[in-house]
Amino acid sequence: MSIAVAATIKPSRTLTILMHAMCAMVCFVGVFLLCQGSSQLSFGVRLAVSLACLSGTVIALWSWCGKRSSYRVEVDVDGHVYLQQLEVGKGDVVQRGRLVELQPSSTLWPGVMVLRFRMIEGTRPTTSLTIFRDSLSRQEFRALSASLRWVAVHRNRQDAVSAGAASLQ
Image (cartoon, rainbow, N blue to C red; front, side, top):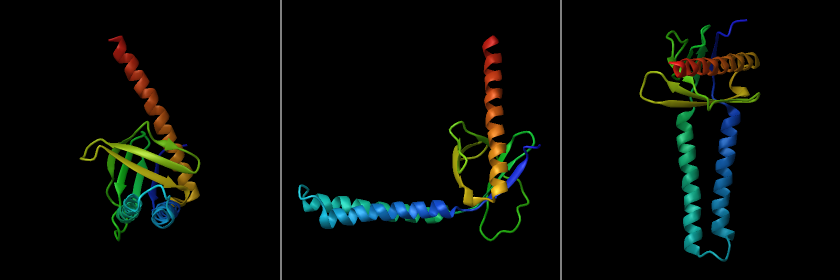
């Protein structure tokens, strides 16, 4: 079995629904505090907290709308990972993405992957990518998860071997 896999990750509906639900709850808390809030708080404090909740909701939704883009993740047979952000309206991807390193802070669960990549070259030091099951087909999700687990295990072994060799010198 080869670990080489290429997958195009679409924006997750589940994550979008969760984000909108969280914003709706924060907005509800803001309105509740303003209208039915504790009588121990003055109206000015309730108004300030309510405005903070409402403005936080607006800012979160505004920033979320700009973040919804597709990505392409490629793992080659040597365990190198490439990440590319796809542009809306473009056809097939011809060029390879940027070489990235999977960080130890990445989380690979059966239903969700929270990937943290460190760019080998470039301006952004780390990039986070949250992948729910609905972002890929079932087969792509399993293949990508297995490949990334292999990369994580072998990276840790290589780090331990290189650290042991460095301590001997």
